Length: 254
Ligand code: SAH
Image (cartoon, rainbow, N blue to C red; front, side, top):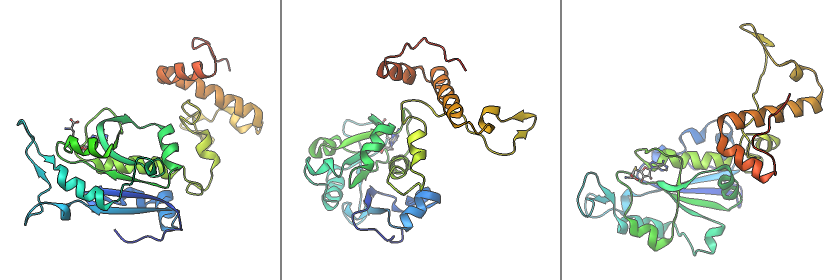
């Protein structure tokens, strides 16, 4: 990838991967791309290949105990992590080190908020059957999953984590208020959104949104957010009600 300018002290994603060309990928587009060019955040890739063994720079080997697939070697990944200078556990509160893994902690908005307040993060992308377990043990690396499904590699998962984090960095979105109101910020899904034309295929925008009555619009949006969350994500709704001491069975009147 080409070097991007970096504002002093800007948040930085340092990615260890067999496929550096996967970055910035979609992170180089639109708002995250513009912010990257402006140096509001930075991206560094560390190619795993040169740390490989022998003439062919082998990075993987057969799984101990047999079975299909290959496993990334501990010594190879260890050398890359040492070059990435991952620091002491204390330093890692300001610069977490993460292994993307389906066995990791499921990514949430709250985690993205926390990561966006760090100075940066180092992300290890797995391939094949994953990485030798001793690497995670030795370095005490945090494992993060982007959902209960299996991808072929950690690069797309890393992009998801970086996107969710970078958009919370001040000035990246331009309009900071939008991150405060959107889905999950208050533990609720977002209300429905509309824009012109006012009528489309016989469907009209809810009248209240055209009324200019800000207080009523805010109440409508809140009610819709609660209703949607209750219908679609009973798990989130129960957690929201517990936090706000509300009755989860309560009906939202409009
Ligand atoms: N054998 C492993 C899956 C390996 S998939 C298992 O069953 O757990 C190869 C790599 O893709 C992983 O090492 C990880 O870096 C990445 N990956 C796959 N699914 C992922 C997910 N849901 N979240 C984050 N990373 C994932």
